[in-house]
Figure 1 (cartoon, helix red, strand yellow):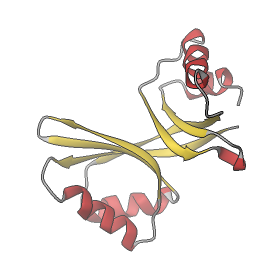
Figure 2 (tube, rainbow, N blue to C red; figure 1 turned 90 degrees about the vertical axis):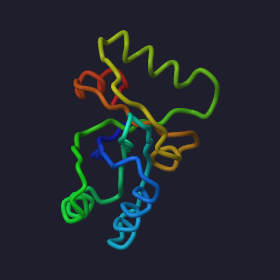
Figure 3 (cartoon, rainbow, N blue to C red; figure 1 turned 60 degrees about the vertical axis):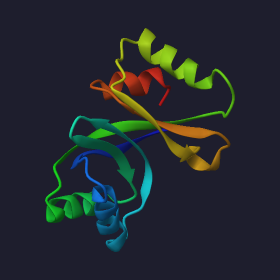
Figure 4 (spheres, one colour; figure 1 turned 120 degrees about the vertical axis):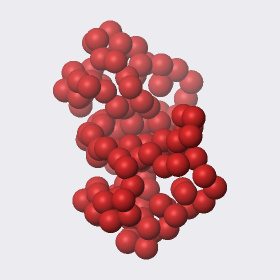
Length: 133
């Protein structure tokens, strides 16, 4: 099972408490984080998030004045066993799809057993075909 989700790429100053301030604003407005990742680049922390309510997330980010961009990503499920993530990466690579970012989104989609991953790529349709969705 593969679905499209809206990803937010958020840039925060690398200061103690900035992430908590942002997360507090999301929680206050009832936005739940489904998955994401974070990393540091010099004086900035970059967070990639998928939420349960992209429209509300956009409103919160604009209201809080938080620099960000958003794009569509694919979320797909795999069985929770060695080599399954490798199979996805091989299918995408063989189809000429470059993966810009990938992170765990939590439990499998549709109640299946396994884990779900988000793939950010410039060629969403080719990625969807490669993943069988």
